[in-house]
Length: 119
Image (cartoon, rainbow, N blue to C red; front, side, top):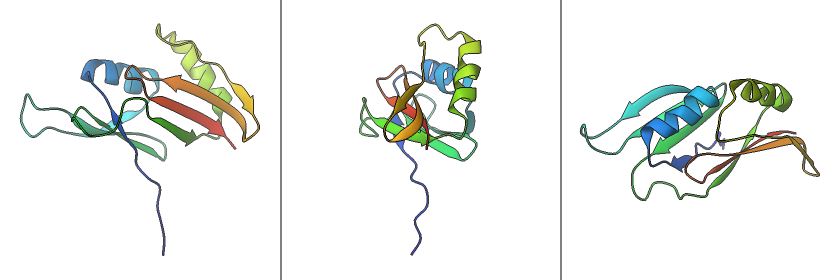
């Protein structure tokens, strides 16, 4: 019996803000987008490396305030990449914690927290 990586569904409320944060700032790419009709809520998959996330405007998909942990082999390099972008809504830092070598917590515009960590 094998299990593969889980794909979290994060609740979003504004497509433009979501893409500004996840695509422009974090450097993810859009794999696909889906709407049942033109004015219906957006559901999309984004990815960077081996990390895949689903973002959803649908009521009932995900809960604002969700925290997810994403393993990253170069937290400091990612931190430097983000600092160079001068995103006006965040000023991240790196923490040393007992359960990981490095950890960087980022809050998205919808109250979700992404914790990038190096084991």
